[in-house]
Image (tube, helix red, strand yellow):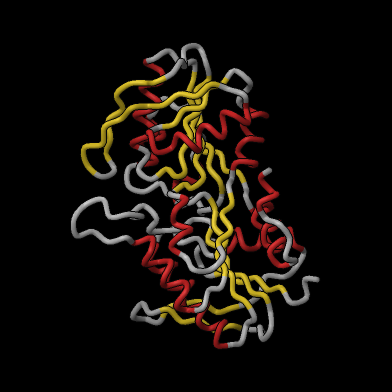
Length: 313
C-alpha cells in the first residue's frame, strides 16, 4: 500500500520528518537542499518520484523566508519530475497572522502564501492549528486541518490534575479554549487585554472564576511570550493556585525565552511542530510534546483515501 508513498523534507525540521517516516515504517526520501554562495536555494531530488504520492514536510518557521522558498522550490522540482500528487505538510503555517485587511494599505499574507503553494503545484495541504481557521478558504485545493488537541489533552490529564480551569488569553481564542474545557469537563475563563503596539500587550482583568484552581492558558502559538506572561501574572493576582500554558507552535522570538524564565508560569507545554533553537532546548520550563504520530496517521489516511476528521471525534 505504501510502495508509491514518498516523504521529503527541507532544512526546516528534518527530525520531525524522520519521526514521521519511522511511524510509517518507510525510509525518508532523499533530496539535496542547500544554498548557493549568494543565498539562492538549490534543490535536487535524488530519487525517482514519477507516479508517486509525495509529501513534503516543511514548517515555515524561522528563518521563514528561507524555509518557505525551500518548500515551493522543492514542490516545483517534484512536479517537473512527474510526481502524481504533491502534498505540502506544513505543521506551522508562516505569515498566518495577517489573514484579513484590518487597516488601510496592508497585505493579506496568508492568502499570498496560499497562492504561492497552488501556483507551484501543491495539490493538497496538511497543516496544524492554523492561526485562523478561515485561512483554509484561501486555498482552491483540499486542506486537512489537524489539531494538536489529542496530544495536549492527554498531557494535561496525566500531569496537571483534575482541578483545572482553561483560560483564553484573549477573546479571539475563546472557541479553542472552550473546546478543551468541554473535553476536560472544566471551567472556562477569559483574560481581557489591551494591546497598544504589535507584540506588546497589557492584561487587564479575568472574566471567570480561577480562585484556588490550576489555570491553564491556551493559545495557538507563543511568539514573544508577552501575552502569556502578562496573563499568568493576572491569573495569580486573581487567586489562581498555579499557572501553566499550552501552545501548539513555539515560535519564541525576541525576548520570549527570558520572559518565560522570569515569569510565574510553572511550565510551557508546546509541540514539536517547530524545532526549539538555542537556549530554549535546555529550558526547564518548556515541555515538548511530539505530534509526529498524529501527522503520520493523517498522511497514512490521506494516502489510503480514508477519513482524517475521524481522528478528532
